[in-house]
Amino acid sequence: MSNSRHTKVLIIGSGPAGYTAGVYASRAMLEPILVQGIEPGGQLTTTTEVENWPGDSEVQGPDLMIRMEAHAKDMGAEIIGDIITSLDLSERPFQAKGDSGTVYTSDAIILATGARAQWLGLPSEEKFKGFGVSACATCDGFFYRGQEIVVVGGGNTAVEEALFLTNFASKVTLIHRRDELRAEQILINRLMKNEKIQPMWFHEIDEVYGSEAPLGVEGVKVKHTKTGEITNIPCKGVFIAIGHSPANELVIDTLETHMGGYVVTKPDSTETSIPGVFASGDLTDHKYRQAVTSAGMGCMAALEAERWLAEQNQ
Ligand code: FAD
Ligand code: NAP
Image (tube, rainbow, N blue to C red; front, side, top):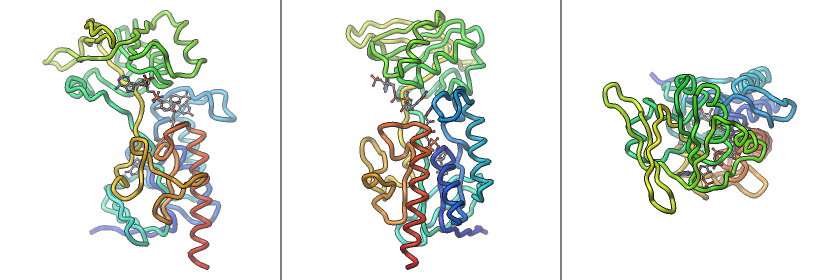
């Protein structure tokens, strides 16, 4: 039998946006329910040092997210370990079905489902996922002690992952399709000084190859983006760090999206195309995609939900 729960505000997602919305909605006495999803704490739980969270020169991502969860809970948010599998926004109260069987109904919804890692889309990448191909250095780096590793990408994530992996690997090759990184300069400086890291410019992965029994990566074939020349790089681990796309599955058919699936919000607002539904964090932000901006949008969403609910009761 399915269990049903009603709340004034349902917050979907437990990254910086979701937990901040939880703090603000609780302090507004809205008694929010926050559903954490498959990744409690969100993307920052997949990294180590965070150096740009105001108030902390350095904090471990997972520790920061444990503190945010405790903060939201202390303020009164009910935090539930469940995954929303479908969302009906066609009438109010809105209805969200949980993987647990619980049906959540709510007067307002704050979407904070963030973003997920992108993959190259190669059949060989798919074949070796979990067997040498990964998108999370902090989760899997430890398995490659003394081994050679390849990291793909040129943004902050790729550079941070390459640096982190030098703690384990004998050598890290950073493969980037251009000769210019889009990572922050402080990270680029660290990368360039690290003798274990060798950048390989103007290259893309053509194929991941390896053994069948046991299944495991032995190397990658990379292609020069200008000449087409193929080079083999022996390695045991391949870390894909080519960006993230918004986790919009719940609303892709109901809310307006743009720029590759980011939920559209009104200017200077978290209001979406459906009244009473607010979107925050990386789900809606194609530009900044930072913990602090996500937290800021979580705050905005809770304040806007509070005002909107008050207007409905007038
Ligand atoms: P996310 O953190 O993506 O969280 C999304 C949440 O939604 C998760 O809890 C997930 O479980 C939940 N969810 C998704 N679908 C469902 C569903 N169907 N039902 C219920 N819940 C659901 N930013 C910085 O400012 N500084 C850094 O140093 C930094 N380092 C980073 C390192 C890495 C490796 C990565 C990947 C990102 C980093 N970022 C950093 C970016 C930062 O992590 C994101 O901008 C931020 O986490 C986005 O917050 P969010 O709350 O929007 O979503
Ligand atoms: P990103 O900034 O979007 O960078 C993605 C990188 O992957 C780019 O260099 C891109 O190349 C490359 N790429 C994309 N598709 C590719 C493909 N199919 N094949 C090969 N290369 C491909 O993504 P991100 O590094 O994951 O960062 C996401 C957000 O999180 C950013 O806003 C970032 O600032 C934030 N973040 C912040 C920190 C921090 O503050 N310390 C750490 C991690 C992430 P091009 O450059 O050629 O486009």
